[in-house]
Length: 461
Image (cartoon, rainbow, N blue to C red; front, side, top):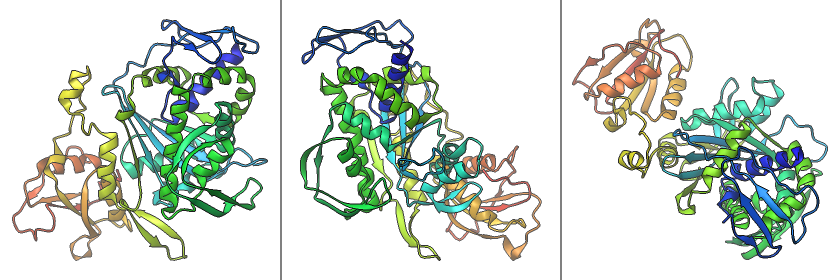
């Protein structure tokens, strides 16, 4: 019984972190292929199966669902897919897949944002590097919480949102899972010819696929999700990975044989998943979120990719081709997925929730900032700019304080356009409490609304 319970929890976790709960299935109907009845008691706290042996045509599976999660706070989960091959240790892997999954329980909406692995970002404590190295650095350097913790912090800084939990899995788990549900079906939009697809033995092979509707087993689905051999490279790959997510969702919600098949092989799948999936999400929260997810309609799941519309292709001094984020555009993208967005405060209240407070309504002021360094810290203004932009502020220029003075004891604000809410919000972000009084002036150049000169009292947000 315990083994079955663990299996069920892992299945919930796996599918939930893919952004698609199989509780969307029309429970209560008979499985036409097996005549297996699904019976539910929503008052029970755990999910169990009464059957301990092989599933037959007359097996009755009794599943008890927990209550749906009743929280009002949006939850963001970082999904990491690592390239862990046969014989590799558990630690020290770069991420081939990085997605942020978000679920809003008030508006019953969700979102999936794919982050390309070549995105060039500041990794806290390590300088700038490709974002897919964060998990590796955190694992190999014993960062508190390991690679997932450093990856979470890096993504938080990039997007300016909290990452509540992570789920990390290797590709063996994915491949096995797809095989056990009988494969997935995807409409492939273009021909693929990858002459150097990486193999598990660190070699290469040729992988080809013609466009059209294709049914894929686990190995083929993994290759489809991982190849970069199309014109859009990593950006196309991110879109294919989202295709795979929804193909899994469709399989579990539309094929009446998928779940009985999973139960029939639960012992083997449990053995595979327990070594391949790691998360810091509490089990009870996983279960309750999965039950909540059944009420999210597909049309209310938004998807996006940080692609060429939000980045600039740059060659680093040592010759690496990377994608540098354009923060102003990423902020707009972030706001469509991780804020109320199209759902107004009135709609949230109608749904029974409470809109998040807006601090002084500084966003409506649309202020442009210049940040100048008045401290001995080299590059402090640039670091503050990145942190402020991650929070949604617009910084148009950074530089040194007037006359190259680096002895400012206190941070100063000059407000040229009457933007008091922004002054207060920036001061709060810099740890200045109470906020210093801004000097009002009308002698600006028009380039910016507020000039901030950083002093010794300023702290990096």
